[in-house]
Image (cartoon, rainbow, N blue to C red; front, top):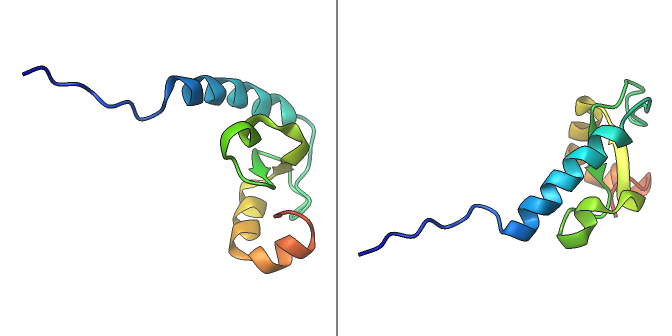
Length: 85
């Protein structure tokens, strides 16, 4: 019996991830987190990351790790500020 390995990611999503990682790295250059004021180290996705939203820069927000954590721990306040939709 032949054993088949199930992919963790589809080929399409793996390709999107490679593109996203390059985009995110460039996006955060010289940006500061609106939550903490620290230099940005990662990208928060205001509208989520499903499908094409992963690479849609209109919904990117450059944040620090601490700021990103705050956004996800304080959803109600972040929604008011427009950091989550």
